[in-house]
Length: 123
Image 1: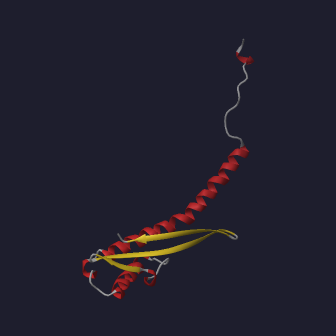
Image 2: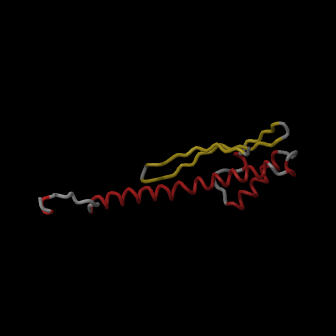
Image 3: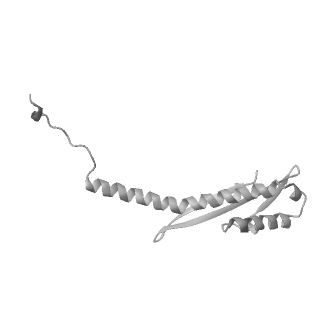
């Protein structure tokens, strides 16, 4: 048997396969660029809730002062998904617990949207 008698299957990616995978990769990149900022904002909300709840000067104050403290921090971090009115305030054994439930609707294309629900607490 000579070397020319063997039939080797050519390996690689065809042009149509390359285009298909490129489209898939671009769609996932676009989805990521729309979803990641929402999760970054949620992390910022969580950070601010924890900071306000653990501030020793705000442990025995009226709920309106807790909301005002959150509003000031939210303005600095440019938080737009929630407002101070959305915050639920509870006290457990002298500890302040702040929580917020909210949804974010992300338009993807035409009439297709992605709805993400968040339940964030300070503890």
